[in-house]
Every structure is written in C-alpha cells, then in structure tokens.
Length: 399
Image 1 (tube, rainbow, N blue to C red):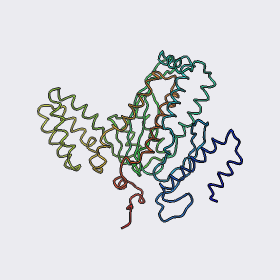
Image 2: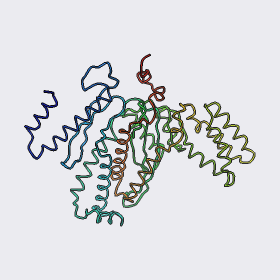
Image 3: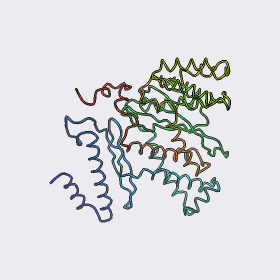
Image 4: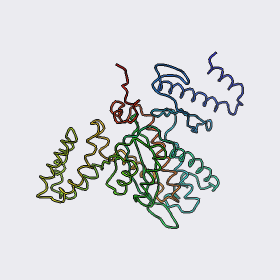
C-alpha cells in the first residue's frame, strides 16, 4: 500500500465527523500541490534525480476559506521562481480587507455617507468593535507576512511609483503617499516587493523604503524605472547603485507641452525616430539630431532633450526584447489604477493602518495572480544574461 493510502486511512480512522470533510480537503489539496511542484522541479520531494532542475525552499502557511470551513495549507516554496496553487480563489483577501476597512470606519464614526450606505446594504450595521478588531488582526498578520517576506536571488528590473489616498490624521483629512515597488526576478517573473506610506515623496522617505528592501534581500538591480522625481532618483542612486530609466511616457507629456497644439504630432514623430533605433549609440545620435533640428524654433524643448538624453534612453542599453516593458512605468501604473479603483469605494480611510490593510491585500492578490500565470513576464533566455548568478547563465540544454 502506498504512503498516500496509509495516510488517508489513518486520517479516516482518527477524524471526527465534524472535521472529516475539512481534513480530506486539506489532504487532497496538499497532495495536488506536491504533484504540481514535482513537475516544476523535475523530481519528487526528497528524490534524487538527474532530471531535477529546481529545488524546494520550505513552505509558507496560508488559510483557505472553503464551504467546509477554514483549511490550513502549507504552500511549497521554490528556490528559483515562485509557485501558487491554481485552485485558490485569488480575490478573497482583498474583498475581506475592504469589508474590514468599511467596518472599521463605521465603528469609529469617521465614515462617509457612501460608506454608511455600503454598511447598510451589506447588512453590517450590527457589528461590534471586537468583531472588527478580530477581522483586522487576521488580515494584518497576512499582509505583514507578505510585505516583510525575505527577497531571494537577483532582481534586474525594479519599477517604483506612488499614488495618493486620503486618510484621517489628528482629526484632519490629509493626502497620504502610497509607494509601491514591483520587480522582475532572475526567473523572468514579476513580483510585488513591497509598499510603504508617508506624508510625501521626500528623498528621505524613498531612501528608507529602498533600504528596507535591501535589508530584506533586494540585490542585483540593474535598472530602476520611475518618473522624474528628484528624491526618488537620488535615493535609488544612493542605495541601489543602479542605472536609472526616466519614464518615457511621462517625459513625452512634459516635452510636448512646449511644442504647441499644432506641432505636437510632428515633434512626437521626430522624437519617436530615436526610440526606433536598433542600439543605444544610434539612438543617442538620432536624439541629438532631432534636438538640433528643433532648436531654432523651440529652444526650450531642445534644451529639455539635451538634459534628459541619458535618462530617457537608458533602456536602449538593455536587451531588445525587454525594451517595450522597461522604457516606462506603465506596468506599475496599471497596478496603481487598480488600487485607486478599489480604494475609491472607501473614499477617506479611518487611519493609515487601514490603507496598509486594503492596499497590502490588493498587492498580495496581484502577486498571487502573477505567480499562477504560465507565461513568464520575460523569457529565461533573455533575462539570464543580466543575472549575477552564474547558475542562471548556464544553457538550458547541454550541447
């Protein structure tokens, strides 16, 4: 009899009727995960095999809410890349976090009319402070574990951006900066690395945020992509010592403001010829030629091009296949747009902890969704050349 059958028989003999269904779901889910991870590593748990191409790296605990109750799972972690079981429902955490934030605002008496209406519509008017406290604590623990997890391996590309939300502080409603970091690892997959909250995007705030990421293990950053925020740029240079890419989309908006309505299309087409070049040297040459052509009629625009050349064209020194994804902050701005869409329901947060609870849950879910995507964000063949890890640079199949 196999070990799995023995374990199942033991389970059936020892479990009470009340727990039997939940235990069987846990057993089946755990077995499914072990089989999936065996396929992702090339060998079973503890098995020695010449066909192995990846290794396990422990487990992370996660509760799975089912109709039979809460099932405790141990999700296997991989040394390279990430794994997330497809059978988990990816949107449950953020929905629960949103409920907790709405309830907390209602209980503390600082909610808006829209929040009050939601409370009544969702039938939550009878909740108690203790119930809200327990729900918040449960979510906060999971979000904190996600945002403080160790970062392993190299992270060649790092996107940084901020969005602003409103929260109550000292009896006033203030605008609060929420900064988010997303990166691609040496396995070509995207992950949310972290978030933080502060009164503004000051250089000291960005510096401390990046230092926290470095203490958690962030290393191997080759390119930092962000908008032209001087505090962020200085912090990235001081902490990460990486090349900085100024968001091309933001730059074009700024530079076209000097072209006039009638000349914007022509100027945009001229500058785009530099982006269409095959390598960094020809791109820089074309950039300067375009600036010189525009200088007699729009000198301020040409001066902006002179000043921004190195930063806007930094991405041209990286693999061609990566350039459409690293020339701007668009990948991160789409995530920020989702954050804004889902936080608009709250409007004004009762405190900063509520922001971390809801935004952190949204980021955790997005990270889980990226983990289950079959296609890598960047291929192993193209990302391997950027890694400082010699193992990553080995060919997939020996000649």
